[in-house]
Length: 157
Image (cartoon, rainbow, N blue to C red; front, top):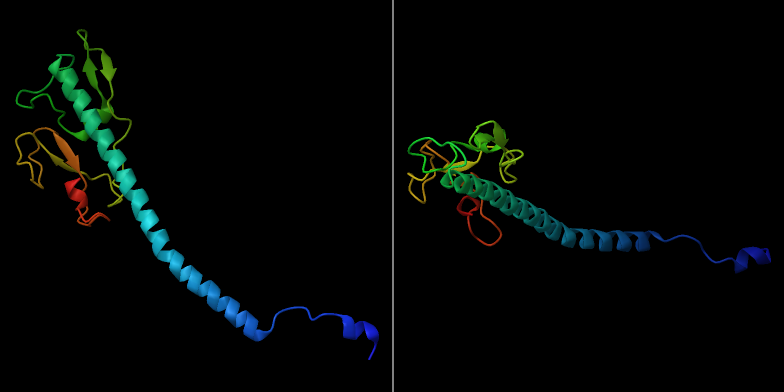
């Protein structure tokens, strides 16, 4: 045998080494999957909190402007917007009625249901009502029946 062949170290891995390395990678990947799933759920929950806060702030600003007589409201609405689209389309403000003020750029998509269909409550509805009376929008909530990571229902947020 030539000398160069005997001194050269073996290159590559044996079959056993490949099986062990693959097994270790599989075990590590199964440990990462639950963490990844919870991270995705947390991101959706954060987005839901942000969207609810944005819409509730828009409703509050509308109510404040109505209380200061900066815009016309329907009798019996208590100064709350008639629907979420009104916050997007805007309302005429000022004494001339030609200035338009928008309170939302768009109605956000509910990250839990994937639709723009939000649950709403009017002032006349019960505080824990799940159906909207249709008179005005006092509060919004998610229509998702799922439970959050903290054990509460998304519809209670």
